[in-house]
Length: 236
Image (cartoon, rainbow, N blue to C red; front, side, top):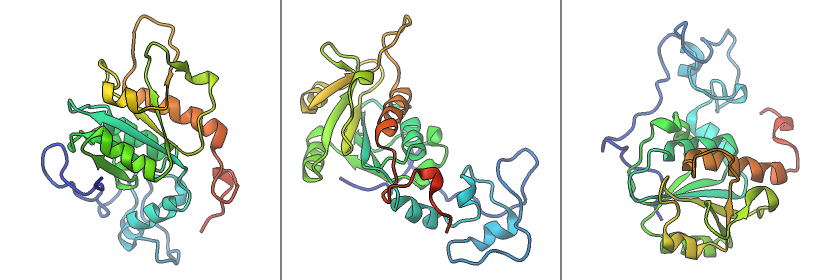
């Protein structure tokens, strides 16, 4: 397993989000902070001076990127997402964005290391992303961490997601749109849950499925480590 350092889908190293430059009228975010500036090592002087154009919640306005990651590390949940990337799946960016939005511990990409980051909308800067060359490598890691591996796919014999209670500590694994989970992944799962659909399409992509599955997990287990709901955590 390797971490999230590495090239993007074009083979080029991604650059950090710009911290300088005046806020434009059509940009997301806030302008320069009024004087006097707030005190704290987690604040970024460039952002305070020029404005914060990032898509972050108010709590993290003007914070350094690493400070945001460190703060999130103290409140991430115990659910992980894994997605197979044998055919360069363009939905992985959305999976990463969902993981960040719902406080998942990490995203695990199985197969090809390169993936299209555009759908992540910069959330990969704050989310742990790990790489596994094979399903076997992911399983070895999950076994070491004592995490149950649960497939999310509309397969024969799968159990409707809305009828089960997902474990607090687990890995939810998704396949590619179309073929779904590989045979090796199916055999690795302790169980497979399906997302019930009522239209004409036979499948939804991993990006959509991951959001539905994470929200299902959150409805049961979404308490911060100290027992407070996330919206009641104190400000630093």
